[in-house]
Image 1 (cartoon, helix red, strand yellow):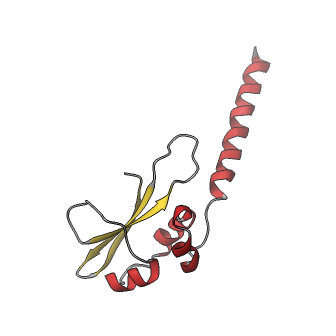
Image 2 (tube, rainbow, N blue to C red):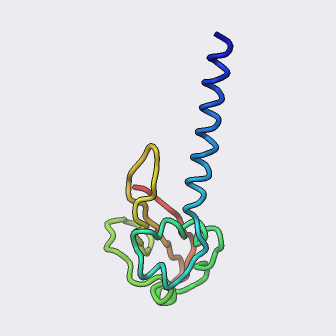
Length: 116
C-alpha cells in the first residue's frame, strides 16, 4: 500500500513539473512585429507586456502605434483598449484571453490580462 502511494505521489509530482515547463515555454519577450502579425499567439508575449511596464505613461495613439488596432469593446468605465491574446494551451481552461489597457488623464494607467 505504501509503495502505491509513493508511485501516485511521484507521478503527480512529475506531471506538475512537466506542466510547469510546458506552460512556461510558451512565454516570450515582446516583439512588435510578431505581436501585430500573429494575434492568435500574443498570449506568449502578454506577461512581458504587463510586467515590463512598456505601456505605462503612453498615450492612446502611442499604444495603437506599438500594438496595432484594438478590438471593439463592451466594457464600461474608464477609457481603454482591448487586445485579443488568443487561447493559450491549458489543461483546464480554454477561454480566449485579452489584454486591457486602461487610461487615466489620457495616459496608460493600468494594464491587465483577463480571460473574461
